[in-house]
Structures are given as structure tokens and as C-alpha cells.
Image 1 (cartoon, helix red, strand yellow):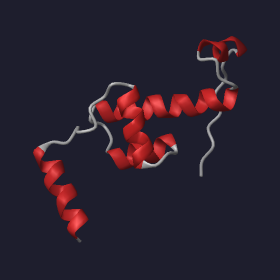
Image 2 (tube, rainbow, N blue to C red):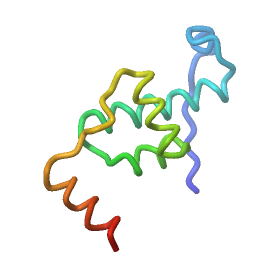
Image 3 (cartoon, one colour):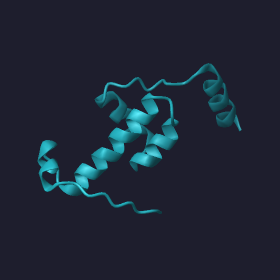
Image 4 (cartoon, one colour):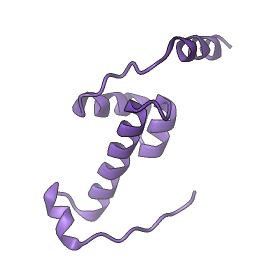
Length: 85
């Protein structure tokens, strides 16, 4: 696994009332949800980026008021075909 380091002012953690580890986890989830909403990544990739399960991702999508169905017709067909295999 690759580790990425970013510097944040200490004052940002109070914005979400989270400690640094919780804050970083929420950043990962927020980024994954937004990228999923924009159609840039799949649900499974979003869950991987966020470091959570797909079920947890769906809960996060609900919390961020993002529709969990972001599939095009082609993606839905591809998902169905890969599930059947």
C-alpha cells in the first residue's frame, strides 16, 4: 500500500470535531463519494479508496445525499455480466 502525506493546519480538525485519524478517514470517504457522484470511479473503486466496504459506501452515499445508482446502461450491463460469471 502506498502512503501519502499531506500537511493540514491543526485548526482544521475542529471543523468536523474529529481527531486527525478520523478527519483523514472522512476526507477519503468524501473524495470517494464525490468522484463516484461525478462518474469517475465505480462503487467498488470508491469503497477501496475510502477503505470501507461497499455496504458502508452506500451508507456514506446516503449520508452525503448522493444516489447510489450512478450507472449508465453500458455499465449496468457490464456489472450484470461480471456478476453472472
